[in-house]
Image (cartoon, rainbow, N blue to C red):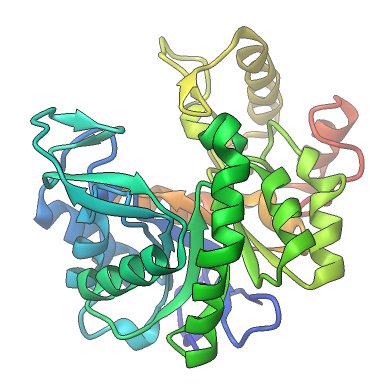
Length: 347
């Protein structure tokens, strides 16, 4: 169990499904310390991770894909001696194989090891990926293991093939690891709630890490997916609360503005402008509202923000602690900017 002796703002924990794991309101997304979009030094990465730890963050999420092992290695090095005090999640579904590519940026990651991620959801591949993650993270167990990026958004017409390989192979490997005590919880890490519903129809999962699909900009996950999770006692970790950045930066500047890893369409920019107008009227930072909103849903046990430097850690703590009046959330509802049925932090 993780100690609740943390600084104010991170000391509210929710149980993960039916497991003994408790997660804090705010988690650390470790893709940026894997050189997402830009390279940072080992020291800068370590300083960022340690700043988060010192400020009370006790949940860290990573993946082999993040910097092709770099994120896991940096996280493992920084958390030496602190392993018992934190919850770690990582992912399977990609194997890292040697490459001769000399591109400075590959798959969005800069200055990475000469490795290429290859999708493989089979039993043997999941076991191999898990063992490699243990070595990079310098640990003998993982708290939460997630199958990474299943779904049509990533795999297109090949989704059914990958999903069937996972359910017949990788899923059984994850079950075996859970039975052995090498992991405590299993789930999917994806950008699509629909594939999570599909998985729940065929298997038993403790949690899902859903990125970007329950935010101030979209709440369709509350219609069928989150109620199904409640019925199955399955928790949801919400990643991507800023929808790739547009809910952190707003749209009042010169841009560019990103939504779902791409240039934001005009309709989204207009929606953010309306959100910003209400934020201005109530003196509420847009980023604070975006970070706090998802956690009001009872099935969402933690919200993960990607943090790439110490200043971002400080800002995330400030945003999570920001006092937001109930009238702000009511104004969003009255303006039709959030689903009329969703719960808000004031509720």
